[in-house]
Image 1 (cartoon, rainbow, N blue to C red):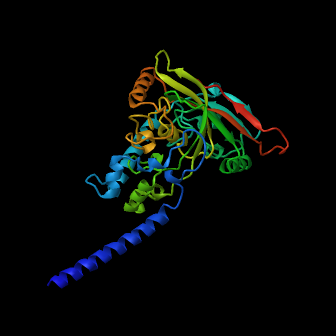
Image 2 (image 1 turned 45 degrees about the horizontal axis):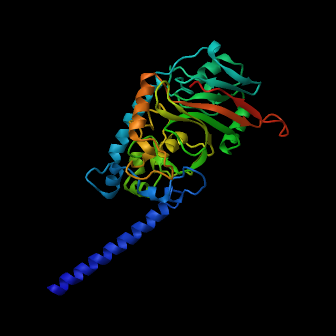
Length: 370
């Protein structure tokens, strides 16, 4: 009898070991892409390997089978609920007339305009006022529909420079410039706290967040492993996409106080190297200096704070991270003053596709309203 029990235990142990080996093989294949533990680069503000532990408790429970494990169906419902909230928010877009359109540059091929904050760039549904609609109805062009003028977009709360195409030929050419990263884009932002270093680079991969879909977060190996629990047919294939390498350069313009308070903020010039979805918001939040007025990725926003990383972990080599108390105080002051997110697309530069390569590149600049 003892021999039978011993044989059974040995057989079970072997089966467990084999299962673990197979699982680890599939996990390693799945996460064989850049993650926070492989985020190479130089400069101040880089998150380090120790932050691979820095994920939210709710995520950890979900990945390890804890009591609060999130099901695929719950993720699907959360995503739908958040999309409904975003649609309601889109309907608050301000309408601007043709007379209010601030044109920075225009020729027969393209137009560059300065978008005010609070205006949706492109329509998410019918009968919502957008910048694209005003441009389509106001300027001379040869496009048959509004969507054929859209080259890129800014978030509703982000102000600044936006380019629209007047012909299909220039649309294709400009899309190629954006896709191949041959357009220089710089943003002026106010962030919480005083950043100690004058310049730096944040080099961290970004992925979609299953805890707060459809938003983004910093990718970690643990978070990637958690995705193995989910079925793409339920949660959507986009959620299971591999993380994307993302780089943001920052340069301090000035260290200030917010409005008439003594709350410290830093004015930055950010260069989006990779141009990922919500990259600047996620990177600055993970760096410990969320953008002032960011009601999605800032403290108490719709997305996870700190770019999805746990407050209990050391976020980065940056020792000047804004405390939770400071972030909350600045957020309250911004809301009281009626401030939208303090982010402005300040600078655009590229070679005009319809001109000679030897010509000087186009360079557009706009002053931030904050």
